[in-house]
Image 1: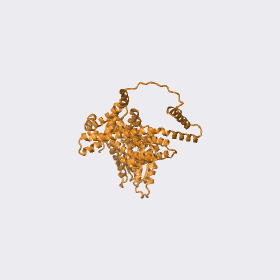
Image 2: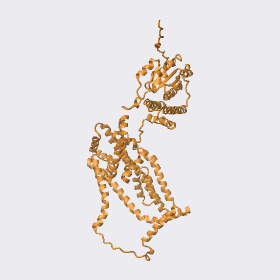
Image 3: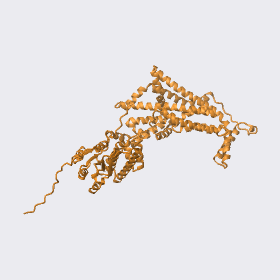
Image 4: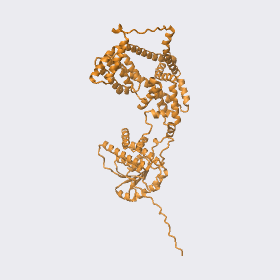
Length: 625
C-alpha cells in the first residue's frame, strides 16, 4: 500500500486547528448521537459486524458462490453463533440462580471467620449484620418449623388475568430487543450486498478529485477494523478456553458461563479482564470451604493474562490499531456515556475509523491529531520545543532516544541543525526574546556535550593522530555558537583536532588570543540566511592573522526533505551572500553539514586574499588664498 503524501504544514495548521465553530459542531453531533441512540446504535453495530464478515463474503465469492448466497451464508453463520452463545449464557445464568441460595451458609461462615480474625467490629461485622438480616427476612418468608405458629396473613382476592393480558406482559418487553436484533440483521445483509455502491457513494460524498486518498481511507479503515475484530475475537477465544477449563477443574460453578463471559468482556479495553475475573473470584469465595479455590482462581487469571498479553497478542497482531493508549481510555468513557455498555464494546473500532479518516482526509485531521499514536510533530520540531522550554534533561533524553536509531551525524543533520534554524527564524520574526535565545543556546551546548560523552563511551578504539587542526566559531549570535559546536563535533568524529570558540572571540583581542598560527583551518558558522557584510568581513581579518590559513564560511540551510510544500519556515540561503563570501577571500562556502565537513578536511593550500581597492579619504580643504 503506497503512502499518502503528507499534508502541507499550512494546510495542516488551518484544517487541524480547533476553532469555536468546529467545537460547536462536535458537541452538536455528540448530542444528536446521544438523543438518537436508538437509531444510530443499530447502524453502528451492523457496520462493525459487516466489517468483520466482509472477509468471509469475499472468500465465499472467490469459491464461486453468488453474491446473495455468500452474504446470506456469512450472516446466517454469524448470527447462529451469536444466538447459540446467548442461549448457553441464558441457560447457565438460570442454573446459577437456582444454586445461589445454597452458597449462603458458606458465605456467612467465611465472613464470621474474617470477623473473628479481625477482633473488633469493622466493615466485616457490618457485612455480617447485613447478611444475618437478609437471612432472617428469607427465613420469615420461606415455610419452615415456625410456620405453625406464624401469624395469619391477610388474604387479598385478585381477579385472574385473561390470556391476552398474560401474553401482553410476556411479549411486550421482548418486542424492543427482538426488533433491534432483526433491524441489525437486515442492515448487515444490505450493507454486505451494497458495499460496492456504498463505497462509491462515500467517494462521491467526500469528493472525486482525489480518488487515491479516498480509496486508501476505505481500504485502511476496513482492514484495520476488520483485522482488529477478528484478531480480538481469536485472542479472546484463546484466552477464554483455558479460563473455562481451569475454573471447571478448580470447582467453580458454571465454568462454561464464565468462560463465555470472559470472551465477551475482553472486548472492553483494559478493564475487561478485571471484570471477567471478578465474578469467578466471588463464586470461588462462596463455594469453597477454605481459601484455596480463591487463590487458584486468581492465579489462573494472572497466568493466562500474562501469557496472552506478552506472547499471544504481539504474535497475532501484525500492527496495532493506530490509536494511542490514552485515546482508547478516553474514547471508552465517551462512547459508554453516549451508548452505555454497547458503546464500551464499540469504542475502539469506532475510534479507529475516526483516526483513519483523520489520517487521510483533511476535514477530519483533528481526530488523528487527538487520538492517533503517530507523532504529530517532526523530530526537529519536537527537539526545538524541548530546547525552547529550557529543559536540559528532556532535550538530552530526546537526543539519546533518537541516537538509538541514527548516527550522530544524522542527528545533527536532520534534527539539531533544523531545530536551530527554526530558532533563527523565530529570532528574525522577533518572537524569540534575548533571554529565550540565551537559555536555548545554553541547553543546546549542554546537549552537544552530552552527545560527546556518549560518543566517547561508544568509541573504544584508539584514534589515529589528527592530521588537521581546525577552529570553529559562531558567526554572530549565541545560537550560531551551538551550530559551530555541532560542526566541531562532526569534524572531530572524522579524526580532526578541533577547537570550538564563541562568536564573542571575533574581536581583535579575542582573535589574537586564539593563536591561529597553529591552526590549519578556521570556519565561521551562520544560521542567518543573509549574514551582514560586517560579519563576512571577518574573513579578511582572520586570514591576515596567519599566512596559509584556510577559512571557510557555512551558512546553514534547511535540508530539502524537511521542507514541506507551501510551509512557512527558515528562508533559503541568499546566493548573493555566498558569492560575497567568496569575493572576500573565503576558501570554501557551504550550506550543509556534509559539505562543510568534506571541504574542511581537504588538504589543499589556502587561497590568497583578493586585492581590495584603497579606501577613499576625504581631502583636506584648501585654505583660501
